[in-house]
Image (tube, rainbow, N blue to C red; front, side, top):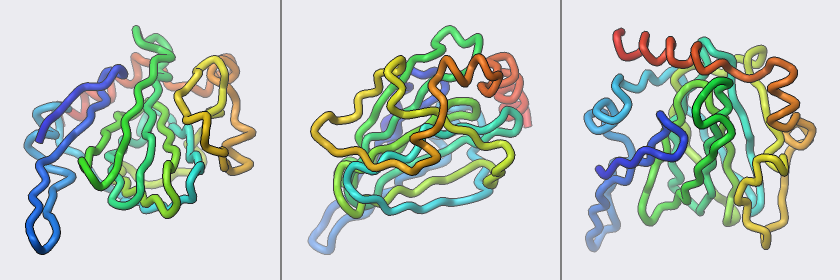
Length: 200
């Protein structure tokens, strides 16, 4: 398993070895040992999510209150997607920075997003399937969104693909508006949570 930290500190890309043969292939998208070595603690799995999307569908940018927030480990077993993580932790040295990774069933890369960051995906093909391992269950009262088309973020959504979004995601505030409204997690609270996870 190859591991690379993304431009958003605490977020990682994991690329497993793929073993093809005349029957097909075998791959382990998640392995605990390299995950713990990179992140510093095991991934607690409280919920798994599965979505299927048409080409051009954007889901996100989503984030949750800290604590407890929700860490995610995401991979794409069918189709292809652009996975984006944004540092929205107020006070972070990299506040507003983002990184993007293509996920598909060729390289079987996965992306880990720690608690306190925003996450979004765009399906690059029809019938794109996304699998999420989530550290906590869905809490509608603590869930929030940012507009993925916020020009201040200038995210690298492909210009040649027509965007499909939910009304909720389209109506979400931009980064500056969300910060002004006090919706964003504080970096200090995130660091405290990470320390507690590592010492648990």
